[in-house]
Length: 246
Image (cartoon, rainbow, N blue to C red; front, top):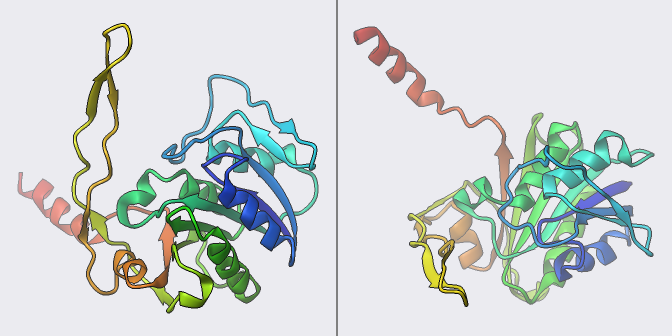
């Protein structure tokens, strides 16, 4: 198996390096990842300046672009040879519920699926037990097959920040959702100019049993199939009726 590995925390992040070590026990792995932290880049592509992949001493690549850039570049003519699977992560911090709308980790996996390959995004609820998340991924990959998901769907995995032996199991979950994000944080730079930081994500609002939030909070790995089609099908008839009534 040939795996393309990317992330949004950057090539040198502990998560991707830990995952690469474990994945290389069962596959050939090529890393193409951002040259710096590009968290919350979502699926953005760089269109107004060139991408400059840099080959590193270990034979892998870092790129002056977003996570989606890295996967798009790798699969669309930059890498030679066959790739069988795209893996994105391990992210430092969860991607639960509506986090997936912003997540560069999830976006990298979606870009792989968009280009015709099965793809996995994996995140850790913390910054300590990356080895646990890596082992979970390696447990699951041998069970994958091409018919497991519909086209343009990925698997989004979130892992509690616990030792492997303390993981209670794996649950297939739906996405929950969060409350609105906190207000922006206003500060001043040394010259007295106002600067702003994006505030923390909102607390979980829909975190009942069956959601990814609930699974991870209770010591389980959550697995959620994610699709590109965001159409709200139940609302289509209501909108059509509304138009026809005007």
